[in-house]
Structure formats: structure tokens, C-alpha cells
Image 1 (cartoon, rainbow, N blue to C red):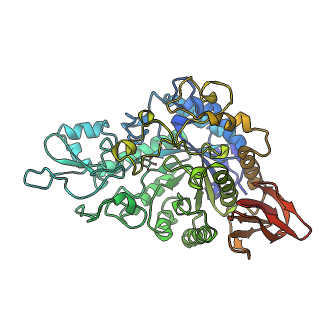
Image 2 (image 1 turned 135 degrees about the horizontal axis):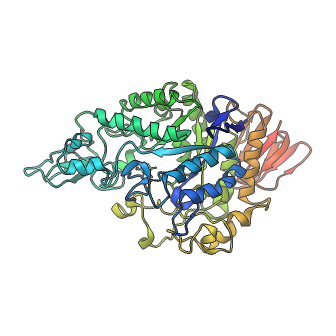
Image 3 (image 1 turned 30 degrees about the vertical axis):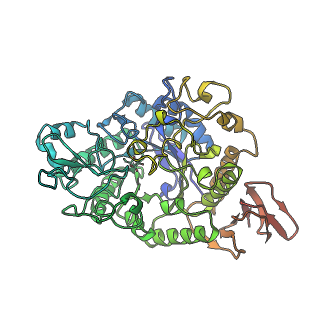
Length: 534
Ligand code: GLC
């Protein structure tokens, strides 16, 4: 069961009524530029979010995770930070951030902010000084090129966004950027880098945030000597093997020191790793007791709609995190991947499966991350005109990973206002006309809507003591059906395209579609999930 928060009147900091809040928390990801626009410029901002916090509370989440809102030239949606202690004027001011945190705490919501330690913006004062030949150069990876005139990159590493991971700087040396050229990688062997991030973490902890989502937590340490990989299409290798720039063992020492820092604050401040590791076992290393609290479980996100594969992924995830005493996380979508309605086939089928996947994952042991708009059943927007796209990946490597704008289209709040109530007349990405009927207001109160399904599921998750943290056991089920029990509770998922007869597990609590129960059996509708009291 997810515990309620109370608020201490003086500091506005939430105090958990039970330790380990994060082990079962439902954390709602707010993609800042696309959630709610308070000033009507077409770009979401902190005041817009603050005004909509009651919506998140009413949905039933425990916390919000805010994507980067720091000073940034926005070469990669704010993941290129020029000043880690300032709020970009696009999104508001530092006092807006402060008020947002206080308002969230007043409502009993915790706030997690993004920290981007692998790279800075090329406009960060350190990098500008580095280019000017200052000693700050040592804080990045500058190397001479290969070839007779140094005209070739120092090694064969490729950027995640496509093209070489190196750009030649004025003066002739090359600098490393695993992402866009505007995102130079920091050299974490340099003590100033470590000291600076300790200070940045403290800055936001002092402001009252409850934790951090650690961007590219698997990338900060590079293999000594920066060795060649000897293969191309390296982006396709991420998550399937340890690369000299990802998932190096050295990153764990940084996470350990951050854990000590977090623990030096009261109120159970947490960190969640965005780490792409080749196996559930390697991912679990990030959540050992003296490291970070959580890591996103991308193994499940990348799993096909296939009962056997889903079950195997759940087992592997729980076994790996269980071995180190950590909870797992369940996540179906985020701002970097195609929305799961579309991944699961799109249209009515994609939505059926997405709804079932939501009930499935919300019933599993652990914590769950929701990506804004999934509770509305939003699909990926696949027909954005090229000229409005802002994802650097699209421009660097069209066709490789060029689809991240389609999951970032602003949220529809109301059916009839301009930009469907997002704010302003022209949102930074256009919303499809079909989103009118998917707006929050259109779905509220409709018992068949995806929004009401999520609200009901999250309310039950709070109420039922058997959900959240804890254990589960699989129940016998025919091929294509997943069934598992938790204390006082069972969940069935029929992944097949046809209804399946199943012995009645108990009393029906919640279902993704109408279910008819007989005296002894139930016909599980195609591509559905049902929660049962047992
Ligand atoms: C993470 C972020 C992604 C960003 C990248 C570089 O993967 O989620 O949006 O582009 O890091 O910072």
C-alpha cells in the first residue's frame, strides 16, 4: 500500500508516515515543456505545472519527476545544461521552482528533479573557457585526432544521436560528446567535476527536492584509454553489451558517494538511475544498498506483447533487484521512446493492450513510473511535419532514432480551448485534432475512459495492503494468459486476440473492459487485464 504524506508546516517538507516510500511509489513524469503552459508562449513552464499539481494528486501519484528546467540553449530539450543552479527563463524562475516544490509538498506530493552529470551544454562557462584554452579543458575529453594531420576522430565511437562522438574544436583537438555536439562529455576523473556535482545536488536538496533522476547514470566513466569498439551502428548495441563508454564498473563509485550525500539529508531523498545495462543483473548493481535507490527497468519497456516474454522479464527483473534487496520499477513510456499505445500496435488494439499493461504493471511488486499522457491513452504522434521537430537525433540521423518529438506533444486538458487548454494559441508542437476527445476534461467522469481506469487503479493500489512493495506468485494459466497473486489480490492478463475461459479467481475489483463472471468461471476478454480480490 502506498502511504500518505503529511506535511510539516514550517519547512513544507513532506514526512513519510512509513519509511521506504520510494519502494512502492507511483511517480508521474512531467515533461516540463509539454505539460502546462502558464504564460501562453506555447511552451510548458513551472507555473503551469504548479497550477496542475492537483490533477496529479487526484490521479493518485505519490511524486512528480520534472525533466530538466535549468538554463539551457535547448539543443536537446534541456538535457544540455548551461547553468545547473538557474531556471531557464523559458520555464520560469528559481522562485517558481521553490513555490512548485512547496505547493507539491503541501498537497502531499514529492518532487524529483533531473540531474545531468554526463555532459554539460557547450554554452556552460566551463566549456567556453575550455575552448578558449583554459585549464577547464581538463574537465572534458579533449584529444588529438588520428591521421597525418589529426583530421580523423580520436577513436571510432559513435554518438547515440548518430554520427561520430567527436567534434573538432578550433585549435585542432577533438572533444567527446556521446550525444549532440552541443553536449560535451565531462571527465569524471577530474576532482572539480565531482565537487561541482556534489554542490549542485546540495543546492537542490537544500531547496527541498526529494530526489534526483540521474540522466545517463551509466555513462559518466569511460574505459581507460578510450579504446575503439570495432563495430558500427553502436546505438543498436546499447543495452545489449557493456561498451567502453556505457556501464563501466567505475560509475558505481560515484553513485556510492552520491548515496552518502543523499543520506546525509533527512526525509529519505532518493535517486533513480537512467541506466541502460545489458542485463537485469547488471542493472541491479546500480541499486545495491549503498548505491542509488531505483533504476528504470527498461527490460520491461522493451519487451514485446507476448505473455511468455513478459513473464520472463518480470521474473528476471524481480530476481535481480531482489538479490540486492531493492524494489524494481515498472515503466511503459517516457520522453525518449514511442508511446506504448503505438508500440503495442496503435489504434483500438494498441489502446486495449496499453490499458492491460497498465493494470498489469501497477499490480506488480515495486514502484511505477507513469509518463504524462499515458493516463489519457495518448498515442505517439507520427505525422509531425519535419520543420516543427526539435529532437537533435532527428536532425543528425533521420531514420535511426528520430521519433522523440512524437511522444512530447503537449497534453490536451480541455476539448474546446485553443491548444486544448495547454495554454497559448500555438503549442510548440501541434496537437492532432483527434486529441480533443482525449482531453482530461473529456475523459473525466467517463467510467470507460483510460483516465478513470488509471484513477481507479491508483486509488485501489493505495487502499489494498497487498499491492505496492512485497512479493507475488504466478498462478496456473493457459498459454497467452498471465495470472498472479499477491496477498488478498490477484491479477489476470489475457494477451491473446481472443477471449479465454478461466476459473473465477475471486471478486472482480477492476477491469480494462466489461467482464462477465459466471458462477465458477470468467471469460477473460481479449487483450484485457482484471484485478480480483481473493
Ligand atoms: C537521456 C535523456 C534524453 C537525453 C539524453 C542526453 O537519455 O532521457 O532525453 O537526450 O539523456 O542527455
